[in-house]
Structures are given as C-alpha cells and as structure tokens.
Image (tube, rainbow, N blue to C red):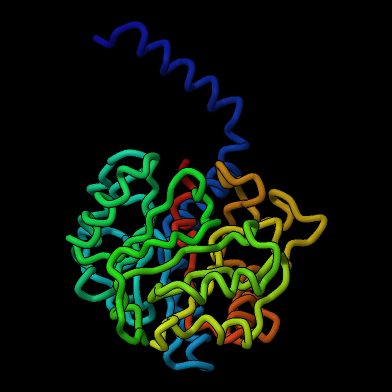
Length: 327
C-alpha cells in the first residue's frame, strides 16, 4: 500500500499535466535544444581551437597554440577516462593551467593534476599559481618543477597579471624556439603599471624569461611588429618566444570588437555573466559572428596577432564549453 503522501503527489501531478499539457511539447523542444548544445559544447570547443590553429598556420606553419584551462579537451568527449583525442593534440603546443597547487594557500587540484600527468610528456604544461603569502612562492615553484611543469607565481598585488617579477626560477641561457624548451615564462596581460608602451617594452627586454606572454594591446592600441621584435631576444642575445593572450570563450566589453548596444542575450550568443569579472560574458562560441571576430579574415583577432609578429596565441577560457551550463 502506498503512503498517502505519494498518492497526494500523484494526484497533484495529474492536475498539473491537465492544466499544462498544451505547453509540454514547446517546453520539451526548448529543453532538447539546450541539452543538445550542452552535449556538443566540448566537441565544438575542440573544433574551434583546431580551426584557429589551422588558420594561423596557413600564415606561419610554426605558429604556437596554447589553450588555457580545459585540459580535459585533450580526451575524447572531454573525459579523462576516455582515450586521448590525438587529432586535437596535433593542433596545440602546450596547455596553460591556473591555480593547480596553490589558490591563496596550498590547495592541490588532484583532478586536474592527474590529467596533466597524462599529458606532460606530449605537451608543455604552463602553470600559473596564486599565493596569498610570499613564503609560499618557492614551494609553489618546486611542486610544479618536480612534475615537469613550468610555473609563474603571482601574489595578491599581481592577481590580474600586472607586474613583472624580477626573480626568475630556473633561469635558462638557451635559445627558445618552441615551448618544449622553456623553463620559465612571464605572464603579463595588464599594462596599467606602465605609463608608456616603450617603458613596458624596455622593462620586459631586460628580463631573462624564456616565454613572454602579453596582450596584443597596450592601453587599447595594437602592438606593432617593431614592438614585438624588440622582445624576442633575451639580454644575452638568445632567442625567446612572444605569445599573445586572447580570450576565445568569453567576450570582453573593453575589446575593440565590443559594440555599444551589446549586452547579455544581445546578440543572442552573449549568454551569461562571467562571475568575478564585471566586463566579461560567457558566450556561445560556435556562432558564426563570434568565430568571424576571432579568426578567418583580415579583420579577425588572430590575424591581428599574426600581423603583429607574435610567435603564437594563448587561448583563454576554452572551458566556456562547461561554464555556459554550470556555475
């Protein structure tokens, strides 16, 4: 015999169905569309990254592509329990990861660490750690280098990548022509601490970093081939790489492509506020309008990066495929 509470629930459901039956078909269609987008999002991001890479390499066969976060995309269906997606891996040269061992204090992300251990012999792993106390810097560096990763550590006053640390862990006198050769890197994507472009360039030039990761723009103005050429040599004369940051999974209100009337859901592919970043939105990145902004034509963001003379692109927010549908 059923408990009365379950009988009441069944009767309630019958009444709801009788009232709402004409709407069910419409709702199901909407839910199916959302479910399909969610199910396909990982594949769409894999294709997006591959297409960006293929486009860039038509101009420079050695153009470097490093997606940040979303390391699970290296596997079929973005599931580390599946086989490697060898096709995807052919189009990338490394993997960027934030807060692997430290997120303020020691907080080991064992899930992502296990993924990276499967990939580190194939691709360079570039980790950015955040420490709340300078006392943690050496430990954060050591943990990463013991794993075979290279590491950039930032403190609270450098949370948004505004500063150039002068002390380099694992300084390297070698020429660097590919990320696999690098032992360290600089992550600098804000120019707020520099009054002029040349001041920023001269400060970076004086460092011995193997890889320079910077933004295409200095205070809204694109860097030029002459600017980038100045950064490609270490003070000792050795070659190094200069990589441009670009977000491909989020739209940023301060970028040149943002239109005055854009807002959430207008265009329709601007879907969801990016928590913690007031000027940024998660997007449905597979829409043609967004793809045309990123690659495939002379006005695209990637073409601007190529024209400026960068050695590659650091693709941020590839994990948009997940955060579009999850908090």
